[in-house]
Image (cartoon, rainbow, N blue to C red; front, side, top):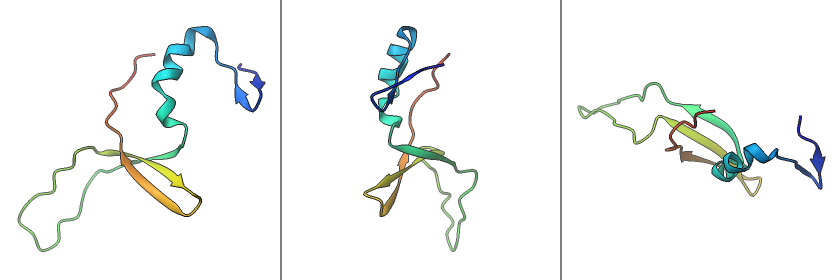
Length: 75
């Protein structure tokens, strides 16, 4: 188990590289997986860039949805 040090968790040496890859995920507090998108009064299907979106909170007032285009990391 990682020990807390200065407000941050201490990361074991073998996980340092993984920590560098995941730095963009620190502000994220949730994931949204889109299964279907409603099509109202249209004949053109909706094609999404990504089906997984990350949820971030900006300045305690705004929720932002961002595309999560990261490939899975093998553990």
